[in-house]
Length: 282
Ligand SMILES: C[S@@+](CC[C@H](N)C(=O)[O-])C[C@H]1O[C@@H](n2cnc3c(N)ncnc32)[C@H](O)[C@@H]1O
Image 1: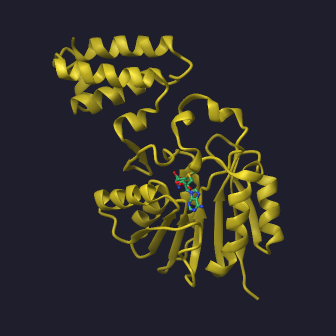
Image 2: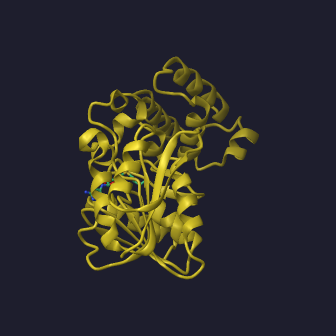
Image 3: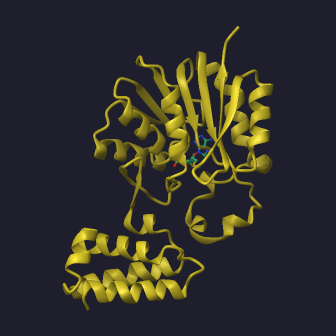
């Protein structure tokens, strides 16, 4: 079988299983690139290249897993975020393109001078690494409750040779005592446990520890908003990514805790997804 023949047959099989495959061509291409080690351009130009038996077996086993709904990023162990190729694994969330909106906003609020940034619930380290890569003069610290997520984020920093970032285990702020930051960012778990989306598509394979929070998804957000003032320099900012229907509740939490300049921003799909506020100490 050639590269082109495999692509053709894989796309058709994925299309037949359209419940789980909404981007069959892209999924098949990523899997084929991963197994053959060839670029997209090579596959297009030399489609008549024959696959080895071992490659065909590996391709079949990955395609079977994709047909059962497993995310392509977990199959190939990598996903790009902010143009950084990040290692991913089922210990945490696969970084989403929409989270780049949070990064853009946070970067726009950073002073021109060096400052400290915290990323709470860092997972792969996506947000922390994106910010550290843009601002090599700043120190970024990423925390996660789960040791395996912290290990993954550390591996990403090492692989990408980003040195102005540290990753530690912490239950939100618990290991950050007495530290102050100019910017605190977080994309915490915010989905209600009964949300039917948790039982659909790729998300079924991601850990609930990265997705689900109590109080209709607001418990971790509430915790972070209420404690952050102790860790923010006066005039510093907290930015939180949340669900598209949570903006009002999140704004109310910011306001009740005494933040000012509270504002919600939309993601690339036009949904209200990031709320931020500034905190001044008396
Ligand atoms: C929605 S994921 C976000 C991951 C990453 N920041 C991103 O945007 O791709 C939430 C992350 O919060 C972490 N988390 C859950 N509970 C936590 C806690 N109590 N303290 C710190 N991190 C926690 C999860 O392990 C997960 O990595």
